[in-house]
Length: 366
Image (tube, rainbow, N blue to C red; front, side, top):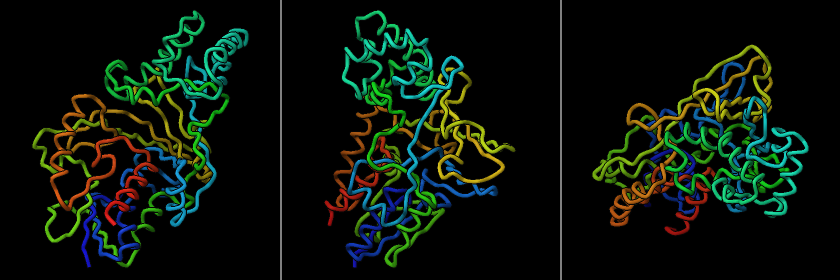
């Protein structure tokens, strides 16, 4: 029987471990240097009975039937559909900016005029990246584009990435659209929700298999004694940073508890222009937890520093892509080591994309 090592017990590692153990009937050892499974999706119930997302809000959403069917073997989901609002000129308004936001922040006559012009310029129910939106000639639309850019995009992006928007890769800015719709949902995927017993329980069930052994608080020491290694840690760390360290943005969460039922109207409220934090999370909203108290987390973005904080978001740039390509070339020369996940692939993945990557990789090796 072949022996497999999976480094990292997040969704990528847990998915590939389960697929190998279940479908190939092979032994899998899963290690993680953290003291818990589920990686940055880790959640837990606190003393108030509130399900806390330790590393920031995680909302599952996907259009993939394959991913949804795989996950449904391990959990049921509620029907939560995520909405985000932001504080714009002191007003709680929908984000991404849509037709409802238009009427929330502008006088009705002005909003109506802009709405009519937008519908003449673009198709309804489409998303236009903010930087593309700025290219319009109409004076009203120019004003609107600059308003959205300055009030929603500019300062938030600067806080989140630590640089001006002009220095941020287009793949990132494309994720901040103007949505020509009245759909207030942050995601439009067919399947959306929160696991009813939390994300940690999902990963625990994936790893609860007779062929899988889990070792926490365990550092990766090498590929010896294993037929295959699946590495979901940072690819530059695997190669001892021989070409230099790949840059990431990290996040710091400040938790606060309040003696009230709710702190805010939505699970996530963005603060593009006020304060040093980017947003406030309130976790009770996700599973409708009942408690006289509530817990929030203020999210502060910062650069990743080894030994100080966690890697969260790969920083997309030409220079970083070239550095990653050097490590990828080294990786391709290894016969029995596979890299996957946000850190292994140095790529931004939502949870569903991370799971789909693991499923596709399994199909390749089986």
